[in-house]
Image (cartoon, rainbow, N blue to C red; front, side, top):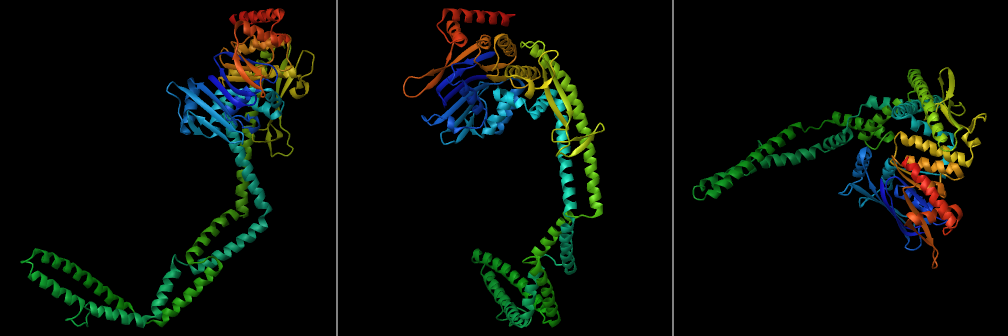
Length: 582
């Protein structure tokens, strides 16, 4: 439940706080006083698109704040979403939401004092609030919206069926497009594949190894400078104590002499014994290095044949690097990419047949699921139509009848499947066209809403649908923005009665110009305009008792101080009160 709403700097509203309670709250006021700004503020608070043009020049930013009190399953879902964004509810379980829009168009959103993306507010709004205005009535005239309304009514099992259909349909459309593309570009793909195969054949014949070009370069350099290397290594080998070295002056003999000398004095100073031990370690390292130098000398040999072979191999590898990459590792990587690309370019008859078989399999699944969707929609349509018709009877349309027609979708411009022996057009939402038809009275033809419903009738159909939806779950807070437009008299009273009944299980906020509707409210807020000074501002007043009767009198006849108008308003309030107690 939304406990409180504060709006500042938005349109004509400078700063107003709306205390909101359970049940039915009505918001009234003169034309231009700013009632629509209340709905606009709710839209902003729950992630709607920001409009800098509605921000007051002073103070240069609009702020909308709201406090939610959550309970039941919705509380857990909202808490989980809020926690994902790094925010949390207050200690008392309430949740503070804030949306700020500057005159420059910048927008910020906060939940529980923590900055979050505006999408978080939108996600919370989907769980707790549904806003319905005159624009929703216009949307209801579109076939896609009528199909969506029926799907929403059909329930959780239908939602799962629709999700499974969409997944299969998406895969079917994808493979159908890929197959058509492969067939259309078969020549170009074959040419590209031939070039890749030529390159792969050449690389496979050479069989380059990772790092081979660098290893051969180093080997060629050794073979080219073998005599200089032999002289340098031979000199170092003898100096370290090689086989032909002067034992009196080589490094190994000198280290042995130093070690023995220190060991002889270790009894006098123990530190010299430590030095002698370290010299022994050095002697071991020198001996190992001397052995390695000897092995290097034995392996070092001028081999013209090997040098020629290295030159030849390097030339072959350079042929690859000129064509495919800067080095051999790059050539190997190119070959791997070429193999992967060949798999994608495969347009062989076997590959095309496999894809075609998969396309046919998915197409059959799409047709089957589309048939199940149609059956589910037709079953839901009967119940939906009956419930909406029942609600219309309580909205001063006792003889009206709503029919929900589920028909095969035309094939024009769409992929086709066969459902129940009929070729139909398949889309992401199935293969059905859904149309709401209204029969206003017996004997009248059933006409599509967009053709046969007046503004008042459309308002009542919209409200009837919302009442039906409310009975099958959905958000706990419902907002109606002048959905009673075009309605008056007895129909207006019945709309007020229906909204009051809806408020028994939901928090209902209604912006209206009809006193018959306002009389049924549990709480009455008036948006009042102040024209004193150079700037027009509006605030929100809570009206009760006599003040409420005066507001209804103003709505009835434009004369808030008329005794007759007030008497009429009090009578209307009394009737509404008795009806709500019944």
